[in-house]
Image 1 (tube, rainbow, N blue to C red):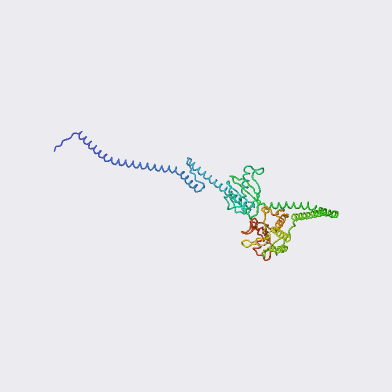
Image 2: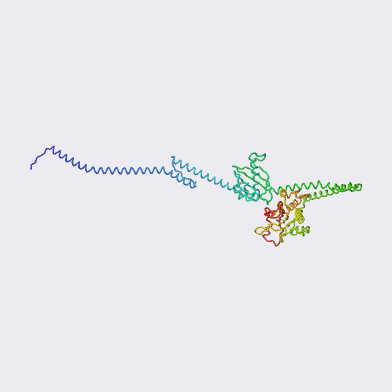
Length: 516
């Protein structure tokens, strides 16, 4: 073995290399750990940064979304109809202002809805009050829309016209059965008023019309008022003034009768006495044809004066009809008393009686009702005087409701004469309206006046001839019928409760009862 000392520099370098190598190995071993530590640190830092960013994003999004969520929930509540006070986002930015504006808008909507509900309640109340007023009005009310179709009808219109107008809503007036002839003049009057109203009728017009809704019903006189409404609608209000017009005519004729009786009757007696005195003075001084002419002329004067006295007395009786003294009467008994004057007619078969037994006693004046029965029977015989098979029937009956309540006691006088002319039917109860060549036309007028005094209803109608009967040429009707309905009855001890209640029932059936 050879041992040789190396140089000191080489030994130092070797030791330095060894130390460097050892240091290199240590650093090589520490590099992997440091890399892993750096990777872990960076990874943790990244995770923390991402978490912080998410947390910040959530915080910011919550701050941004909460007002929007409040708005969305408020919108959903409003959509459901909930207009209660809405929450407000406490911030001074635009979103906070938006929530405050939305809450204010919701409050305004709630107040507006409350106002609308109050207004609707007021309108409904006003409508209910108006409907109550319309339902209780005696006048008829019809409202037409802008197309001229019936929109509103009150019960008064149905009662006056006796037509189911409530079922005719949506129809034009001329489409309602029974009003075909009434509609054109009314619509024409509306058009004239719209085109150029006359002085004094700027707001509404007024006119009277005559109407007959069915051949077997009375002719009505209507006072019609019309007015324009907003949005092209039209209002028509009408009243039945038939009885008023009849009463006015009756009063006018009464005044005429009083003046006739006063102005004409006084000179008649001097005229008659003067003519008779002339005959007495001159008859012995004349001979032959002169004497005959004097007698004939004086006889004519006396006859005509008597006729004038009779006419004046009839008018006086019409104008000064005494007040009725009412008492309990048997209608059948009165009929028997009057028809005793027509015994010959009964024996010849020209007068037939059909009296219903057991009729309730009516309230009336015996003297006036005898005059009524006599006038009706005499008029019937006058109408069939020229017919060889002329027949007069007198019938009494009790009219009852479906429930059996007594409604009226009726007297019918029926003949098979020529009936009433149309112009007579319209004004049959006015004085001086007659079909007789020598009649004064006061018979039915007196009957009507007495009927009004007794609260009875008088009705006349023509009867239609059954198939195969009547005039050979088919020109004559089957005759005429005059009906008198009494609705006031005398109380009886054995009267049932239902009958007592029926005493107060009006004879509504007489309004629509026509020829049988």
